[in-house]
Amino acid sequence: MSTEYVDQSGPLVRPYAMTGGRTRPRVDIAMEALVTATARGDREAGSARHEWQKIVDLCQQVQSLAEIAAYLGTPLGVARVIVGDMAEAGMLDVHEPGRLDDQLGTYLLERVLSGLRKL
Image 1 (tube, one colour):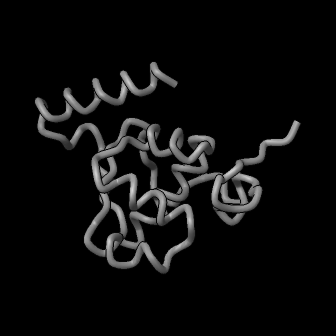
Image 2: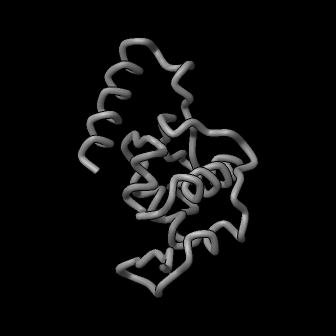
Image 3: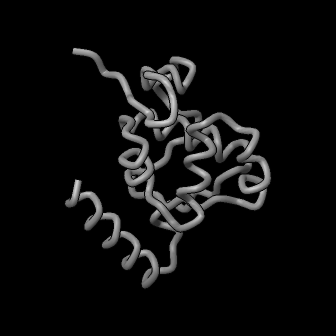
């Protein structure tokens, strides 16, 4: 069985080809971590790789790492590596759950849980 990812606007790509074969991120990101695009991400998305452009577009609104993986149709580990690389490049801000304002964090985590249940 093939574990290939079909991108509607591009060719068939094996998910781990998007990470250069890496299976572990350089930074640890929880699946419920919330991600937003930065001003740098907005400026540089047009010249970035296709999946990076898609992630910056998605993250104009707050998205969890799990939601990003679902929208891309990639395994969570692949999304974790890509988001970690983008955060290191200054294109994304990653907000770990323990660092959020309690009320906002609760609301957003409930939204993530609801989204995961729909998958």
